[in-house]
Image (cartoon, rainbow, N blue to C red; front, side, top):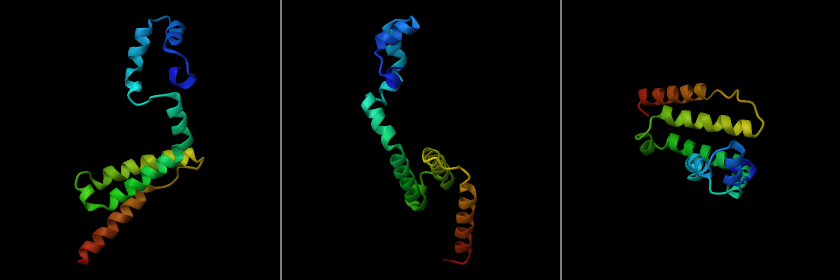
Length: 118
């Protein structure tokens, strides 16, 4: 209610019949990531662009062999899939994209290249 409706912690405390300190303590984890209602509004306005930027970064990571040493291709692909799904939903699009099939095809192509000595 503090972040979604702009209420003060004291108002939320009265509403739930708890102390303001209890509300403050409950909000501590969120205070680390959300600084203000303006910040949340800015994120909402730009969420699709933020998700697209993250997807692009993950795609770069998927083809960067040095970065893949630290994470498996499957880990990066899973993260990409989650971002892609969320991004498509934000844009009002369906989620029928089959990333698993794309990854399998990429892997199979890479195996064939290695077997041919490329």
